[in-house]
Image (cartoon, rainbow, N blue to C red; front, side, top):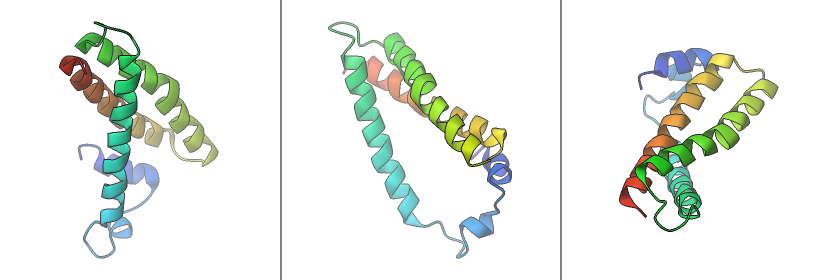
Amino acid sequence: MALSARWLQAVEKTREQLMPSGKPKPGPFIVSIVALVVMAWVLAGTIGHLGPGQVTLKNGVVSALFLWAGFVATALAVNNAFAGRKASLTMIDGTHWLGVLVIQGAIIGAMSV
């Protein structure tokens, strides 16, 4: 929510355009929950492949950073470049997903799952 105004500027939309009824639609939230569960599951599987005793807070965060840099940031950059979107959108979305992955990695690592 902290970057919502800047995000709206970057996508060149208003709140009213995204929520004509004044209420958010549930579809994106359902997709988001499912996607976040899948992301956490894949991240846990990746961290687990580091081997016995290697699932730690530090390794969870480092693994999340590598996966973000290798897959999320690169995919966002390519998709937004070809769509002709503003670089600020890539930065905002990239920062959001970096935070999501680092938090997930820290929790998974701390739990030694």
